[in-house]
Length: 441
Image (cartoon, rainbow, N blue to C red; front, top):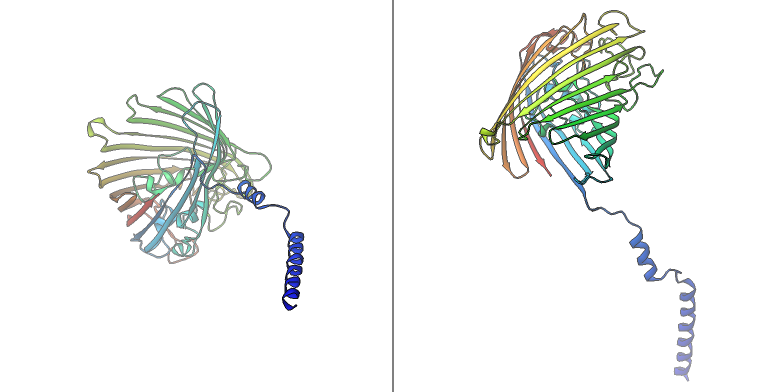
């Protein structure tokens, strides 16, 4: 009897449990769930998309006379007082490049930099107005170097376009230190724009000549070039590049014309002040900026690709009629011209050792100080620098470089204008020694 009762109760429990489970079962079956997962995801390895970059760190030592003194022609990280360990940059680039096919296609590229260089790429002030230049080196800074869509139109030999934010077309040196012959940036690099936001088109006529033309907001700005925000300013870019028949030499000519005095990311809206003397980017006024850059390189065939020569040059002129400041040196209601040239040489002795050198001159004319930071040279100043760099390719993807540099010339050193001890200008010479280690991927 007890066995019969137990069997009846067990059967009832099974029936009730089955009914409850049937009522609570999801409408989607296991097969439907699998389909849902397959159709909702982010693909991280799309064909043709490449992730690349590098980690760049090092040590620099400046033989400056005083803590507040900076070398005017150097980028901020390169002029920090005395010895300093540096995380120059962590660079990450994500790209889907256009193929070589002459057909309608699209791609993209995004470059991000984190590190002390990023801090100065965001704000190009060289440190003259800082109370302590060394204390402002910030390795946590984030800089969006590029972010653009690339498009190819199958017209002629193919017509390519970049739309978005992209690096400058001017200058021989680039933002990425490891891609340059030297660790520190040159005098002329300080005078060129870093990036633009706009449209740039390029066309290759044949194997020897290609050209670029573009319209952008202006230099180093996501906004337009009109400093008083009363109009829609812009800048026009143009470039013509000639490649030698053998492919071992090329000559590039680059132009930029801006419809107003260029914005600069350093204190762009503050106007003239005691700590930023005579900037052309005051909060009101009109003007123009014109920059011409010519550079070229040559690898003699007799040297079996071991020897490389290069040159770089700049000629710029700008005019700013500032309604707030009319005195010379503060707002500078007038024009300024700056000019410079540089020569490079590199010899690859063997697979693991190379030696590179650079010599540059930069000058400007007009009364008073037109700018206490790039992109405009100090009016009335003459700056020189010489750099010698030894490179060691230790193992695959690992580069070690050691460098020595000397800067001199009129007003080549500047003290903090708010600090009596370090104020004023000097002619140098100023010496630098440093080392760099780079891992690329």
